[in-house]
Length: 264
Ligand code: NAD
Image (cartoon, rainbow, N blue to C red; front, side, top):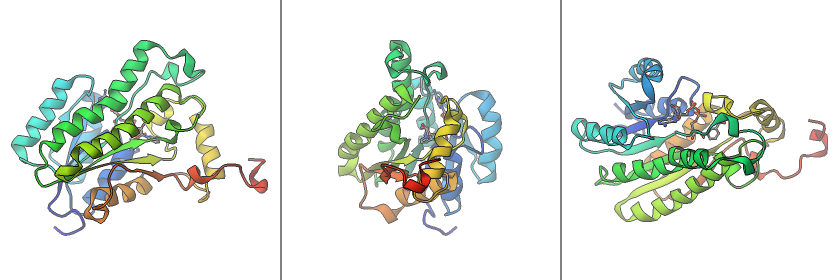
């Protein structure tokens, strides 16, 4: 086939359903000729992911729960057998106890802090290591973050702390793997209505505030993220690594709303 990613093979982690950001990315990549493999977390998601994967011509659809590193190893050993090498990975995985995505960050428990960090931050490092080992000719790794990493968003709490660590890990991984031609970047997406997004208390208010105050005056879509992911995973961004790229209708550049928007 032809397209920007013709002949390239990549792994997509984090599709839960057709509203998932990872799904918006997968369709953009498949549309440019990429061959894809997918992971899913548990059988219930597996039943949803399999038909989606098949609709973009993928037949490698593998279980993976990043809390259990043996399942991560199994994924990469299957990819090694099936493909031998890899060109890109999309990591769109995050989790925190919903009961702590409200109220004060200060009340985060030690147990949920560690679990949030392992699933939402350290999993990217573990995956990057295994992926880079399969990228003798270079490659591109992409994760998903949110602006709650650098500025306080109500209720985002421990997830903001995990995203700050994730963004720092993007920079360190870019330095580690740059010499072998593996690029590492993040997309910082504006609020999107997904399963994970719905776990944040008052997510609808964040979403509506974003729509009325972002320069583009509209919500971020999974197609927006897909287009930017295509750039970051293709040779078009060959000189870009260690970057956190905002796909948020420009929300992050705004400080105070314009007077005519103050009522919103
Ligand atoms: P989603 O619910 O569709 O996807 C989250 C995925 O994480 C699911 O597929 C889930 O199975 C997976 N996951 C959670 N725990 C896991 C585990 N232990 N092992 C393996 N997989 C696990 O929601 P989404 O919004 O598409 O989230 C994708 C990424 O985008 C996340 O990193 C999220 O933080 C980030 N993000 C989301 C938004 C938003 O507003 N929705 C904004 C910026 C960044």
